[in-house]
Image (cartoon, rainbow, N blue to C red; front, top):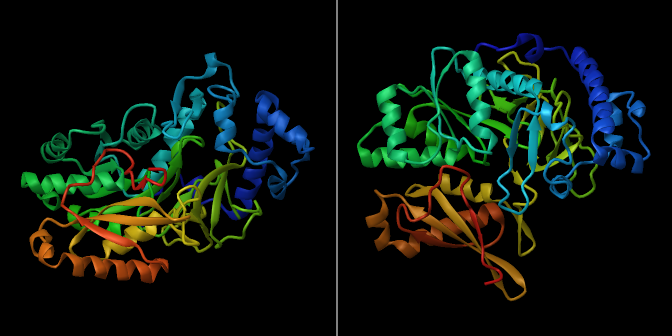
Length: 434
């Protein structure tokens, strides 16, 4: 059994957890109502006052908070503290428009480090580890979030940041990195570059990977573990709620333990907003219980997942969240069928001779949406596959049709022809207006 960073809360009884959650929920609702004008307006419009929250079930009566609302009050409209009490600011990337700006109090930063310490410990990191962070150290929360949590457990931190992949490999080899922090797609890119450099990552001290920031499949996890010789764990967080540290896998690799003493997770029907029972898939909604600078009440994450009611052999009692299956805004409706990029990725990781590097091309075919998928060939299979290109493409198309229920045209492309980045992979290219 792996070490548990904070047994008092990670092994808390259900009865004590509910008592603590109610106490903190009542505090944060009052805090947000009195300090954030947007929340006062929302609560008043719904006819609810903080004193009306008398049991945990009353959470479902509170209005949702959406990303669009946060953008409308850009930059500081949802801050609950004056700027002289804010000691850190992060933001979302803003790739889809106005970014969401988030403020942290000194207390928030302390809480953040504590929660990240929990998830890295759950993954097996100790004070004896040397952790290489290959996340960006900018407005993105990933780099700084993992940094301070790793330091709290006593691990030495290598703030490598993103880019210059050959240098990242040299650092791993020369410094003796034991833990890698990155997106899963960048981890695969590190494997590709290491091969060209003649570096066998499996022979390095590397033993643990903490990956997040984008959805990834079990197939991709298996490939990373095989090519790096590590235990690859999944962790979850988002800027609007805190950053990394919301939930993370233990060494069982079977669901991410949700830090329920600081966040209440709900799963809702994304169409109706109704709360679903544990075990049913829907949209994740999160309420922060202890955040001072930027409290979030029932924030709609758009991430699709479910809560796992089973107990974990690791001894933690906090509920587990299943791997994110996709996002409500990533879902593609093709010929009346719901399609998620993660479904395509899972199929590709099971096909020998291709890399899990792909791009979905959205097009218009008459009045209907249509898709094609560009799939990279593996370097070692590329020469042979070129002689049987059409046959290989048809075989992949048949597998995709079995899983998705619709025909998807597949285009095999040369190795390394799809762009790699240190951040989130761009999987969908929309050419419907072209």
